[in-house]
Length: 222
View 1 (cartoon, rainbow, N blue to C red):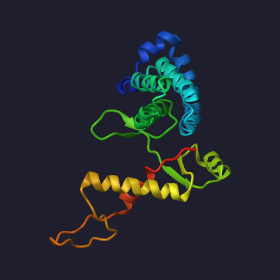
View 2 (view 1 turned 120 degrees about the horizontal axis):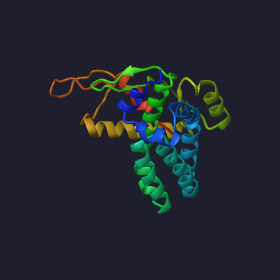
View 3 (view 1 turned 90 degrees about the vertical axis):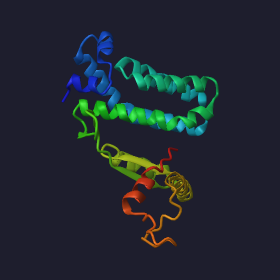
View 4 (view 1 turned 90 degrees about the horizontal axis):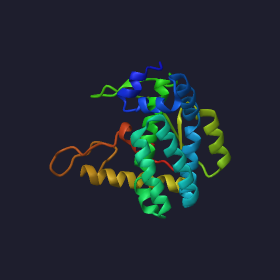
């Protein structure tokens, strides 16, 4: 694909980036390296965060912030900067509270870059002129790092591999998601069948699509 207008439409500041790289060819070469290595960096980021190692976390997020600056990822840069400052101040609370925001922005940028480079499929986002990748996920529940690593090597190029470190952790997280969903939607029962309430109205059914969505939100990185 490599249509610069596609990047600009999706909020990438290509003009400033080209001021650094000098040509679109050099930009393309380096951003390809970014795309090919970003999953490993996200894994490293989640690993040190899980270990509570804020010194390594700060170094990793600083490197990501620098890359965001080079390539013109403005919002990505802002979020990474905030995480870097939080790590410097030993503010793990902020990092955990805003973790999903940062990771989602990184994946949004990766999706844009992947489509620009022609490496992933494109689909139009409803109500917008931008695009997003169709991403399938595999959830692995296993305490053996070898199994997790093997699955990631086999399917990592085609799927987003998610994993829980134990059955108990996965079930606990699923229950948390279900409780949160019930509170947000005011739906107390969520039965697997359409039973009648006392007011003769049907209860909401926990269908396959909703169950799959709740499961896909269970992400544990060792």
